[in-house]
Every structure is written in structure tokens, then in C-alpha cells.
Image (cartoon, rainbow, N blue to C red; front, side, top):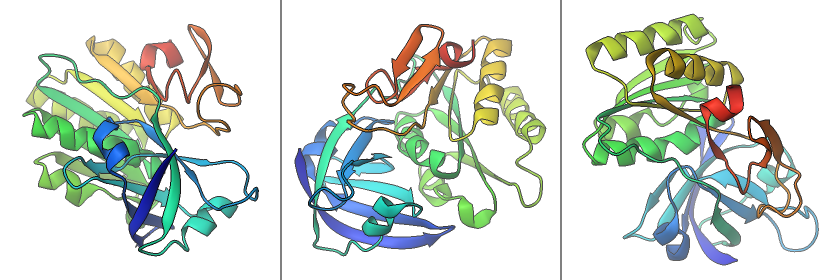
Length: 254
């Protein structure tokens, strides 16, 4: 268990909030794609922690950032956090994204709150000199975030929406193909949508590249003991909190 102090907790549109927390212990250890579990309130109601992918982190500053959708009782409590509030954190947990040695270009596909787990990956990859092609999907422009952060790291960003039909799988496929024609894509990463996951899998198989997906499942213990978050893969049932949340696309869709 780690103690953190809320630095900011602001609404950013689309029902999302962006929260920054000072927690040097987690900031020092966290890797792209990992999860932190937050105890939203003292006592037994709500009883379970809420799992959140890390949006951004700064090891030197000792900060971690989250973007979350306000939906249930837990996140409604979190929406009331104010700067200076202390919170109870567990993590980081789970497997992280891994960049292939020698990779020069990656594609990241995120939809809705699934964008969260991919932003730090994009920033890290761009910081290592890789070209990053990011496709961010949502119902409307209000449901898409992360563009400024990624573009400040020199990533190429495309936003697609349900509202104008641009989020259609075939259009996303066209964007990927255009990007590939401009330079080979070495890896593809996806989170937040089954249809985008299937698209990423098909694309990875067609072009012989590594592909990974971060799965979103309800979690209870967060440490692999309770088996609430199991998912079926080609290796049998695996725990998203412990064996994931990042899995090879071939294990999920193969």
C-alpha cells in the first residue's frame, strides 16, 4: 500500500476527469500500461479498490496521473477529491507494454477510457526516437483526450468519432494502411474496443508484426488471488490483473 496526495482533479469533458497524484514510490516503479488500484474511501463502503491505468508519470517529480470516467459510486466519490487529499494506492500491478528492440515505428489505437493506457507508451516511444502513429477514437470530440500530450512528443495523431462516422473500422484500417505505406509499422498496440482489437489483430497477422492489447475487466483483489477478472485466451483462462492487462493479440484473438 502506498499513500498519495492529490495535486489536481479536474473535469476535462466527456464525463472524464484528469487527476494528478504525488506518489514518488509508484512514479519510480511504474511502467507503461500498468495499473494502480485506488481505495476510494476509508471504511468498507465501497469495499473494493478501483483499478486505473496510469495515464502519465514523472519519475523526477514523483507524480502519476490518471484519466477516469465518472460512472459508478467509486468514481463519483473520486470526483470529489480536492488538492491536498490523501489517498490509498496499491500498485503498480500487472504486465506492461514492451517495445521491440530495434523497432522504429509503432501504431497505437485507443478508444474512450482505453486511450489512457496508451498515452504514456506513446510518449515513451517517441522519447526513444520511434515514430508514433496514434489513432484516438470516441463518440464525440469531447470523448477523446491525449492529443496535445502525444503531439508534444512528436507523435502523429488522428482523431476519429462515432458522431461523423470516421471511427468506422474500415476508415481506421485505411489510416493504418496509409501510415504503413509511409514507413513500416513494427508493432501495434490497442485498448478500449473489441472491434479495434480485432482490427489490430488482423492487421498484425496480415503484415507479420507484433501486436498487443490491454484488456479491461472488473477486478476485485487486484493481485491475482480472487480470479474475478479471468479472460479466455489461447493459453486458457488468465487473470487480467496478474497475467495482464497486456496480452499478445494472438493470445486473445488467435
